[in-house]
Every structure is written in structure tokens, then in C-alpha cells.
Length: 135
Image 1 (cartoon, one colour):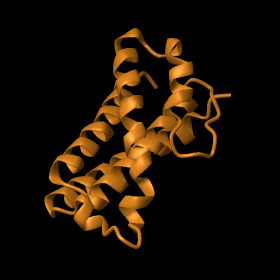
Image 2 (image 1 turned 60 degrees about the vertical axis):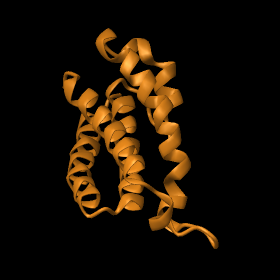
Image 3 (image 1 turned 180 degrees about the vertical axis):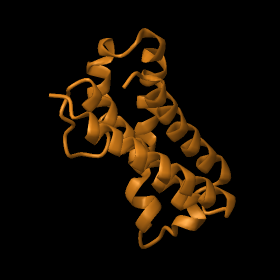
């Protein structure tokens, strides 16, 4: 069963976070830009799965599951989804470190403007695909 309300809720929340994401970037807060972009991607990926009737698992990066169901998305977005799913793996790998750092890693010192712009581009790509789908 497709829970369209839940998928739409995820997308609404992702769009709100995207507005905040731009503020982080504007303030040169690159670590939080990366972290928040990952959360946006996670919400949109799960919304994309729900829209095709797949219950998303409770882990952070479900791009591989989207890849398993690519044929259920319009042909016009399949290649872009595959590309974004590959890039989302980088975001997922940065999730905790961007937020918490480590004993020898300060998040504000780790990320560059280029990292943040990459993260924004990935999140924006997912939102764009989600908005292009019917429903």
C-alpha cells in the first residue's frame, strides 16, 4: 500500500530543511550544510520508495534499494537517480563526522565550501526529481 500522505510529508519536511540548508551555506557553516543535506536526501529517498509502494528500511542511505527498483520510475529520471544514489553514499559517510567530529576532528575545520556546494547540489537533485514525479 502506498502511503501518499507520508511520502508527501517527507517531501514537505525536506523542502523546509532545504531552505535552512541555504542559510547554513550563506553563513559559511559547511559542516552543518553537509549534515543537513544528508538528512534531506534521506527523507527524499524514502519518499521516493514510498511512492512506488516500497516500505523503506530504518537505515540512512536507501539509494541501493532505489537502484533495485529503478524500472518503476519514469525513464527520464532513472539515470539521474542512479548518479545521485552514488553521490549520496558520500553524504552518508559524512553524516556523523559532520555533526559530531571526533577527538582529532573539528567539523568546522574539515569541510570546505566546495564540499558544502556538492552537498547542496545532491539534495537539490533529489528534490527536483521528487517534484517532477506525478502525485
